[in-house]
Length: 429
Image (tube, rainbow, N blue to C red; front, side):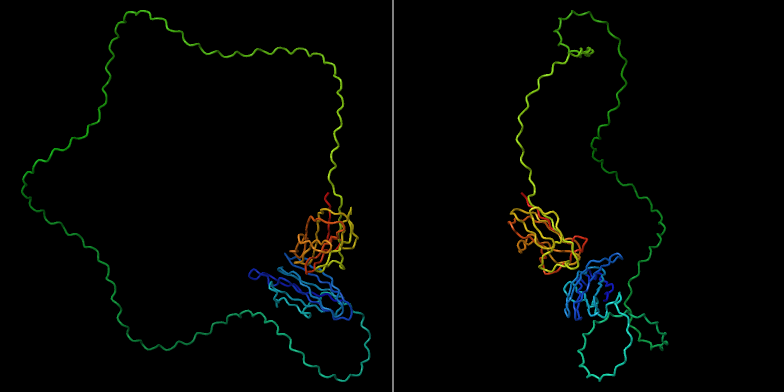
């Protein structure tokens, strides 16, 4: 047997797109008997390598098989464990448009061995036989395909500057150039100092008196002056004679009622009277009507799959087997088969799920009597994880229910002891 690896393949983003989105593996069995190969896919994140794809394939003599795996990772690696040395493996990356990524192509001779090949003890060297006749020269094989152009090498370092050349002889004096344009007028100079004042001239004769001007308007009234001091109070006059008594006035209005006085203190509580005699017990009432019986499940069942390498991979269009039964009431299933039968008609809630390690792009659905119900299709959007669905279907007595890979892409279930697939049916009353 042989154990080989592609080595770590870097797949970092380039302009927001990874060079390889899917990784294709092609295996050829050149042996004369059936041979096995186990394919292991790992992705690297944060310095940790994690297994995300695992598949065991048995190949007949001379047969070829091809597998596509999800590869949208910063780095990934694939390992191959073969049962014989006659198995040849090649692999290559493909971009989102399906084009070959030359940098991620690995030929059989480029795979690195990471395990030993079982070899028996070397026997004694036999006697050298006579040399056979020289065979005819075989025809020249066709030229192999031209390999991809290698990456451009890094630019070499800049060489040192050459020595400075000798100074050349002075050239002949050029002809005199034309006169330049007249320059702009210069700024005006500063003003000179003021000269001394001349002598005062003689006073002229007085002119004639002018006519009297018109009388001006009256000025505004001046502010009022402060009041003068108050004069002294005069002497009080004598009291006048007492006047006659006036008539009696009407009675005044009744005055407001006075405030209520405070309440007097509460008197002492009187003695408690003796208890009266106990009355006779009343007649017992009639019993109420019995309530309606509560609702329940008249039929239900649970089945699940503990997958092995022999049955973990479900081909496109195939049904999922269920190796084990949980509780079954009014529902029948034979362990290890794919079909669950409901013996009575009614509305059934069906919960179903598959845990996969490979098969992104595949799809699961419920099939009734071999026909897929379109309302139950759930696609696999990740390469590793659970695909979960739930539906309520109206079923007839004797209907056969299966969980189907409703796509052309195979998927691989989680191996035991993990639960690879499960389905629950419950009939509503």
